[in-house]
Image 1 (cartoon, helix red, strand yellow):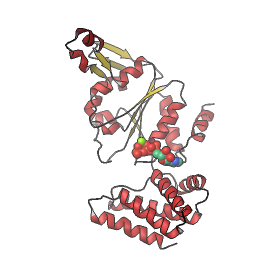
Image 2 (cartoon, helix red, strand yellow):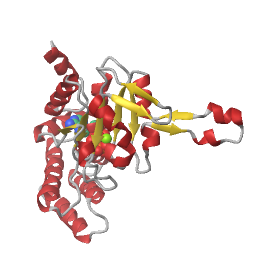
Image 3 (tube, protein in one colour):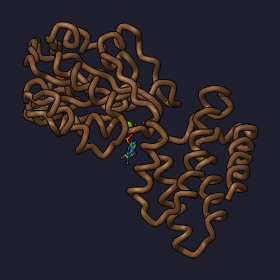
Length: 287
Ligand SMILES: Nc1ncnc2c1ncn2[C@@H]1O[C@H](COP(=O)(O)OP(=O)(O)OP(=O)(O)O)[C@@H](O)[C@H]1O
Ligand SMILES: [Mg+2]
């Protein structure tokens, strides 16, 4: 029974070839653990999290963490207008609950997207909640208790520029689930389905290019990231457009690869730019 439900969720997902991440997520959620989907950018973390939550009984609240976020947005605190000179305003705006406090009070599940964009200190008020199910609202002098079936999913982009290294104490409170690059045949299938007019030869070159950038990133560390599944789809759509405007396949591919290469290269590092340009040229010459 449960297996059928898992299969339904996986099959109706826009994100293909991430069955393992889906199954692990669904099982840990069933066991009541908070999960953290992590991995390189553009591989479907946010989409997977939303799709799972869309398929749960309860509604959910969602927040995207930012660098400037503090405990105020997460747990809550005194509203700035509580300091108003006008007593009526001051009374009306005494407290503001943060997203976690609201989710628990409204009995809604929760998605914190881009979790590691905010410093760990923003989350210091939810440790007890994550491990023992209670949220202390200091500003109100009350304690909230989460329901047994409360679901919290976070997504994180470890190592991406502009993200914080979250403390290991915080990390430990989530079950980490890796969402990596899908298998090549999955991306091939996704592209063929999305762009029925694009030749299989061009699709093959786009994937050759993307997979090599991932290798350069992971094994050689010569570029700061590889091309994501999202990037591969963008490349294919752009290529398709150029070809429909009358460009030949070779020019369309090299234009696209140059451009996506620049997107992933470190623009302050000439070597990194040169390497992706050479790669684009090299692969285009196969057409
Ligand atoms: N495996 C996949 N199958 C089909 N489409 C995919 C896949 N992976 C990514 N995509 C496409 O990439 C888009 C972006 O995915 P999403 O925003 O969920 O990724 P993300 O990992 O959250 O990215 P970021 O790290 O930038 O937040 C999706 O809407 C989808 O179109
Ligand atoms: Mg995302």
